[in-house]
Image (cartoon, rainbow, N blue to C red; front, side, top):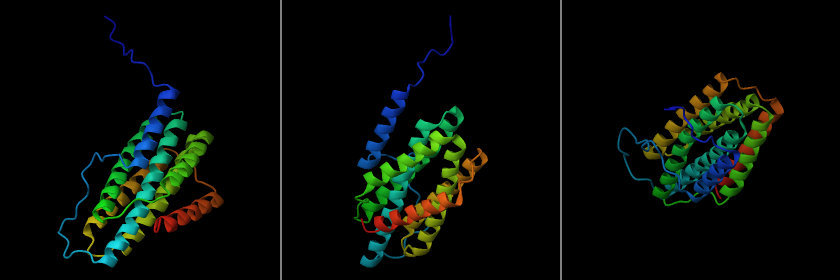
Length: 218
């Protein structure tokens, strides 16, 4: 009896349908985490006051926007790459970013707040960047991952400095996200990422600043 795997390979249409499904789930807040939400080792010493809760909600909304963009970036790269190995790597990273997305969304609910009203715009922009980078080359695509994750890691470190000391729930989430992002960047570097030109890196920082500033309020 023939024991060869005769499963039909995925088509381009299948991949685009999957990407569309991911976009809808991301923007609708329908994604679920595969890992438990990080929790503080010790219980919070006191409840957040109104000012602290507002600050935490603003920062976590910014972090949620970053995860919306990560979903768009990785799923565009999944479509664009020609390498089966990189397809698997991007898929695994996107799965962890889905955890981040779900964690930040849950924390926003706990803080009685909401995601950014401009999430569809952020998703579309990040998807376009990921698609173009991926079509140029896998090395350039990986270069975007390295630079993006480096900027996100720095951004999360700044949030650990700004979050209220008593908001241990948000701080635990941000700390785990920071560790995951550092690992994603290191993996992309080892996979052969090209170093992006300085003007491109600078433009990415300007775009990220605009996004995070706007998302803080909207």
